[in-house]
Image (spheres, rainbow, N blue to C red):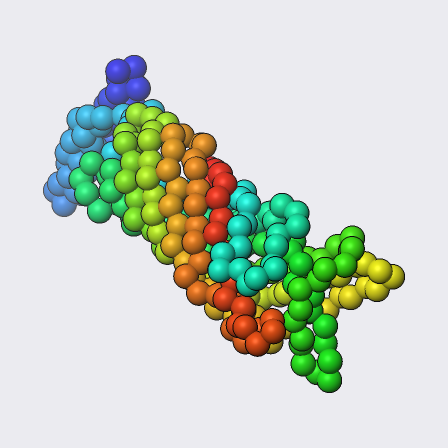
Length: 256
């Protein structure tokens, strides 16, 4: 209210000043032009009906969010004798753009871009012979046997949440589909006085895809992912194809 009074006072002062200036002018055209100026200045003084409220609720909000996922990988469809010898961890992070599809904005679709890393600790030995990789089950003692995979992710998801303009704390169920492209791989072995460090394995599937779900309240959400195609495209042990799939379970954190 005080701001409105100040604006009105300023405009009236300007109007009175211009009227005093217009007094000496005898030219009708000049007096008419100044009268038009007086009119619009007077009108603008009453046009200040509302002051911007920076604390007003945003009814057109979006849940645009950065995400961080920490999970454990369980290999599925394992060949006989294949075991995970230690915990295999995975991490992913990125950004999702939110597109609400109903008036209450409780339903939305989202698409994004991210990065993911998976470290698989298991007992598959990879040995390059004459330019080709040979695979076997390791039955001897070793210190390290790990396959490291780095992906660029393209997730898309359907979102349901109980969010409102008043609060960013709400229940959610987000389910989606993720396509991942392998950008770098590395195999590390250390045992029995032998060390192997190789990358660029052409037997790995460059393209991975799978379904996932995240559900929970506020920041903390349970996360699950299942890979729909194998990690390897052309690898076998004892003439049996490796059809390993990833199943991840962990936590998903959403950050505005």
